[in-house]
Image 1 (cartoon, rainbow, N blue to C red):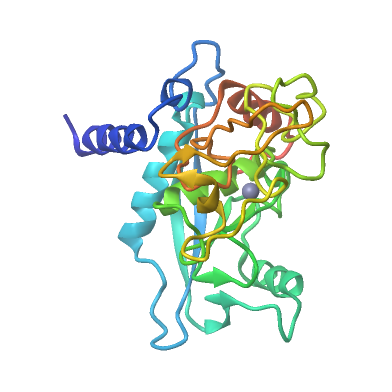
Image 2: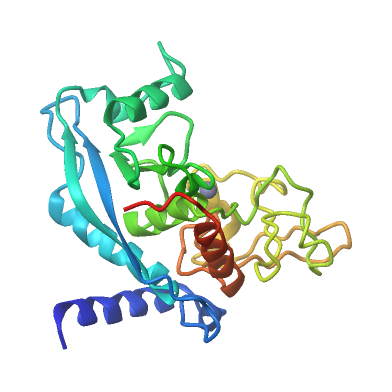
Length: 281
Ligand SMILES: [Zn+2]
């Protein structure tokens, strides 16, 4: 057994230990999924801290993160490796992205314009972004030559592993919405409106995160206030008076128990990739 196999087994155990139920539905090979047989040679940009100008993440950390993230995408034969690690050592302003004096959007645009390499997935690793939890992934960025960008925050995210956060942001790049996506109508627990509501994906249960708001508990982060461990304990009813039971292990959720994608999420990502005329290296 090689090191990668051992790492992969350990990671699966780590995942299962998170989820008492439903783990069998996530993170496994579904017989009918397309195999994309593709490794992305990503460019990873690492911010430096303002104190000593040390990179916020080491090369070993980045390679391990990419290996773990690749596990989540293995059912459709996608993987990610670091073709280049670029330390942003001439400017420490990028480790804690602030919304002043430039707006956050302008600052991020500037960072991307300065360092982004076209036709690649560009992963920016920063310490934190003001008022943004975990990071950002450009929706359907994979279909473009210049917007295949994700930013992950190492210190403003309840996920245990940076790989869970990166997988989530890459999910956006491949056209997935958050399971609680708020720009569409709320999804009903019975799933009747799943095609036009929430994340528009029908095998992800309705997720009330951010809509039905628990009483904030100041000893914990917002996402954790819906949970006990990785069990969803927040009692909220949908318009039909049914209790929500979201899948807290879904990578596109906000809960720090991310463990896998569903079959329909894999199909959606494959569809977005195959429909794109741009093919990233
Ligand atoms: Zn998201």
